[in-house]
Length: 102
Image (cartoon, rainbow, N blue to C red):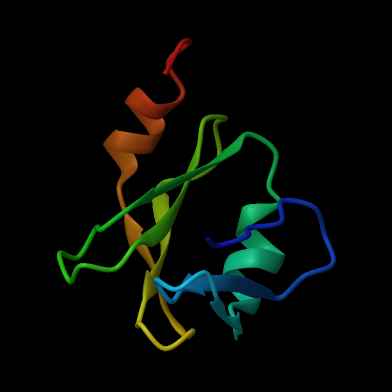
């Protein structure tokens, strides 16, 4: 379970990794730009999935308001750390993501 706070104040992504026996391994990996600069932007939606195909759940931010032309992604490294990218996607964000009902 990953927690992404969309209000100011955090610079990390706390994660509870299920151990399969009812216990959890807790980490709190640093992600200052992802959380402090992007996740709390008005209109941002948090989307999870395995975006790089490594079997781990990653976190993407999609802004449904005008103003962004990229998709910030925090790729899970499996050890509580994140690789942060902010890849360009101008048509995806600027033309489709802000369509009503998306």
